[in-house]
Image 1 (tube, rainbow, N blue to C red):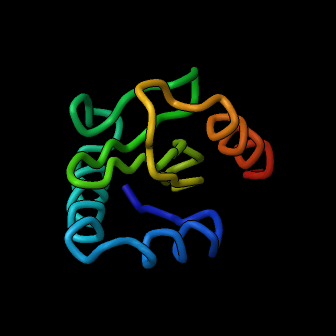
Image 2 (cartoon, rainbow, N blue to C red; image 1 turned 90 degrees about the horizontal axis):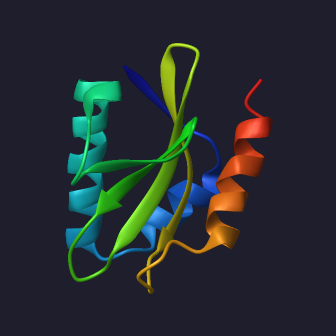
Length: 102
């Protein structure tokens, strides 16, 4: 499946991270591109009906929300995870982006 990045903010966020973390993100995105809907834990987790998160583990815990839209995967929003539970504020940002996909 083809991968699309929703906003420049997400690209800037990824580029601001450590090189080793960027490498893990790119590897996980490659897995997503290859396996699509079939990518499961520990790499991907379903958040809502049409919102998923890429889970990048390591020194920095990174989450990148994505959605399947038409015949592609759209990376919506990313953040550094600092607590056990995913903040509702971060989920809401991604859900707002989904509304603007069409």
